[in-house]
Image (cartoon, rainbow over all chains, first blue to last red; front, top):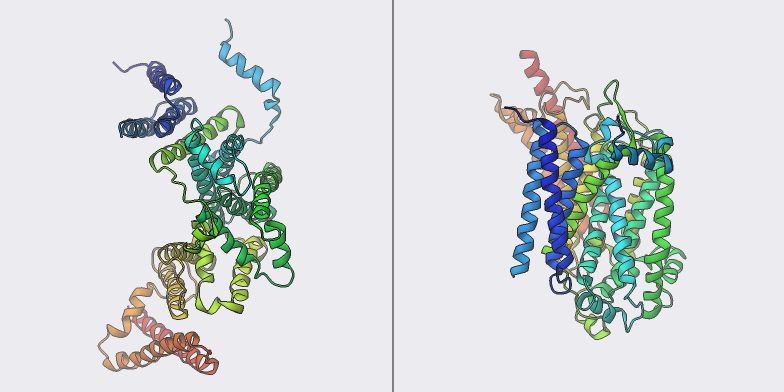
Length: 90
Length: 473
C-alpha cells in the first residue's frame, strides 16, 4: 500500500524537529567554555536540520529530487554530529 | 469549518507587517537558484559579522596595550569567545569569497547591461568597501602578523600619485603612531565602513526593486511565474542562509583559530610581512623587480585602472549579447582575470618576502594569460562552442594547426617551420630584451615585429591549407 504523502511529510518533519530539539537541549546543557568546538559543530548540524524542515515546507510535494536532497541533508547533518562527537572526545 | 490557526497567524503577520502590499517585489521563478543568491548570502555573512562583532565589542579594548590582551581574554575566558572570534574571521573570509563569486557570476552573466548599469557600479563600490572592512579588521587583534601586513598595505597607499597618497595615509593611519592607526582602523571597521556598506546596500536594493533580477543568459521561459516573497522566497532564503551559517560554524569548529604573537617592534623585525590572502595577488604584483622604487607607480596605476575598468564595464561593453558563448573577448578576459588572481595568490603564498625577477613575472603572468587565451580560442573555434569569430570556415583550430605537418607535400611543412622557428626565437628575445635592465627598446620592437610577422605567415598558411582541404572535401 502506498503511504499517504501527507503522513510521510509530517513524519519526516516530526523526526527532524525531534532531532533539532534534542540537539538544542544538549547545546543548552553543554559546557560552553571547555567544549566550544563541539558547540560549533552541533550548531552547524542544527542549522542543516532547520534548513531541511524549511525545505519540506518549501517543496510541498515529495518528489524523487526532493527526497535525494533530504538524504544529502541528513548525511551532512549526521557527519557534522560525528565531527562534534570526535571533537568532544579529542 | 474553523480556520487553521497557523494560517490565521500567517495572515495576521502579513497584514500587520504590510507584507501583502509588497515590501519586496515578487521574484521570477528562474531566480530560485543558489547562483542568483550569492549577493544575498554576502548580506547574510555581513549580518553574521555584525552579530559576532557586536558581541566581541563587549570585551575588546582598542588601545595598543590592551588590544591583544583583550583578544586573548575573549578567546580564553569568555564563554564561546573563541568560537565567536573564529566565526568572525571565517565569516569575513566567506564574505570576501562570496563578493568575488558574485562579481564574476555577474560578469559572465552580463548582469551589468541596460538597465542595471548603476547596480553594477554600486556593487563594485560595495565590493571595495568589503575589502576595506577586511583590511581594517585584520589589524584589530594587534598581532605581529596583522600589524606587519597592515603596515605593508599602508606603505602601498603612500605611493599613490600627487597628494592622494599622503592624504589617504593620514586619514586612515594618522600621524604614524600605533595608537592613532589602531583607533582610526577601529572607527573605520565598526562605524564608517559598515555604515557605508549599509547605505550602498539600501541603494542597490532600491534599484533591485525597480529592475528586478536579470534574466538568464539564454532568456527567460515564456509565462515564467512570479513568486511572492512571503512565504516561499522567504523560506528559500532561510534555507540557504541556514546552510551557509552551518558551514561557517562547522569550519570554525574543525579548524580553530590560533592567535599569533603580540606585535612588538622586535617581533616584527624578525617577521616576513605578508598581507592576508585576499590582497596577496596585488602584493605579488608589487613584489616584481620592475615595480620596485619608482616602478611601483606603474603597478598601482595598473591595478587602479583594472578596478576602474571593471567598475565602468557597463559603459565599455555596450553590446547586446549576454550569453558568454557569444562574447568570446569578454569571456576570455574574465577567464584570464580569474586565472591570474588564483595564480598570483598561490604564488604569493609560496614566495613570502621574495622579490620576483622580471623574467619570472613575464613568464608566469604572461604565460598564464597566453595559455588561457589560447585554450579559450581553441574552445571557441572548435565544435564545443559554435561561434564564428573571424568568419574563416575553419571547422577545428586543432586540425588546422596540424595540417602543415599532416600533408604529403614536405615543402609546405619545411616552409611552415621557418615562421615557426623565427616566431619562437623572436618571442624568447622579446622576453629577454624586456627583462634586461635597461630595457633595449629597439631590439624589443624588432622582435615584436618578427613575432607578429611569423604569426601572420603561419595563420595565412593554415588558412590556405584548410580552404584547400575543404574544397577537396
